[in-house]
Image 1 (cartoon, rainbow, N blue to C red):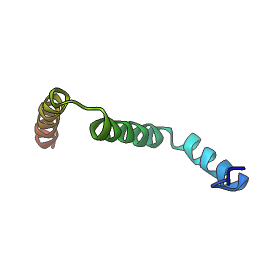
Image 2: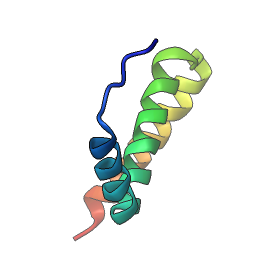
Image 3: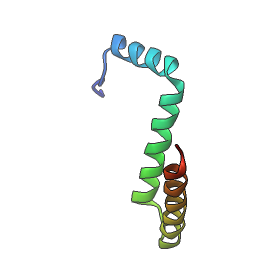
Image 4: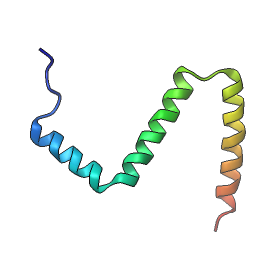
Amino acid sequence: MAKNEYTEARAKANRKWDEKNKDRTRYLNARSAARSFIRTKSTLDDLQELRELIDKRETDLKKQP
């Protein structure tokens, strides 16, 4: 039988936090997916395109006041 990583109380608290912080949860999930893609599935072409997108995003963010 698999060992539960969390108690039911901890799982409930995690769900409550996720519900209360939807934007942060979405951000963390998207960041995790991007990192996972880069580490495990990306091709050289993908990485080149991502570099270009990152460079453009950095430029745009630096222009903001």
